[in-house]
Image 1 (cartoon, rainbow, N blue to C red):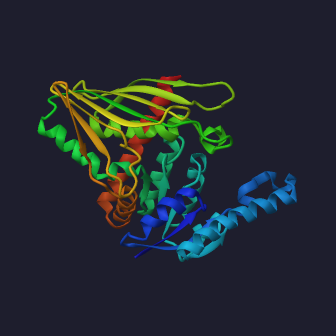
Image 2 (image 1 turned 90 degrees about the vertical axis):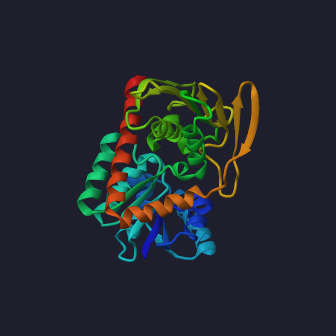
Length: 343
């Protein structure tokens, strides 16, 4: 039984990770760390008002206490304290993207397996370095794009394979949401914000899944708006060696959309909750053939639980772990390709 601790008492840790972890075999929860003042303020600590420091510490401790009161476990002051603890085998990192590399690297260097929220890091070279450390130390590193584990993807795959909609001509994948509150890390460049890393990665990940190993980016574009330092939305086209293409669109100042359209020679399929179906929710898909529309239910699932269970497999099985290294590198390489093409 592996023992896991959480770096940062974030909302996703409380709302999604912990409920799923309670049902996972092979992994037990030990505790949560909130940031020390030194970790939070860094070099600015000496110049920071004592009241601000005290408020930050009280707020973060309060979040950790909320998780403890619901799920138990120990509270650690300082991420580094948790990472260096000998009662921990694995670390869950739900921090903003720009902080993933630093803490994942420290965890791996101290012999801890790493389960990290997407994206793994903010650039290919950082992810490559983490993978190399993990390989050397026989440690797992798993990026939590949990949607790929949802049973609805397999059902849609089976419909495609059945030939019901004929040969695939095009995939359209869209993911976007309305603007969040001011100060949200997604809009802060220094924290790894931007639509590409937050939602664009999902569309690229699914396109690679659908198009196969030969999938590559042909073109990419980003859009900025006044008063924001990060890209707010973007689009791209990917293609495989068979000439099948996927059109991608994403954004974080958009009408909500979370959809897949699969356009075939004999029909088409659309589904509207391809990335975000929560536990117990049954998504719909619509099948269109000869101007006739039929709507069907897709299965409910718990993709977060399945992602955690896959992490356990990575820790325990060398072949699974090695395959996940390549998945990580492929995803981050496509993200880097997008950045290069969009300039």
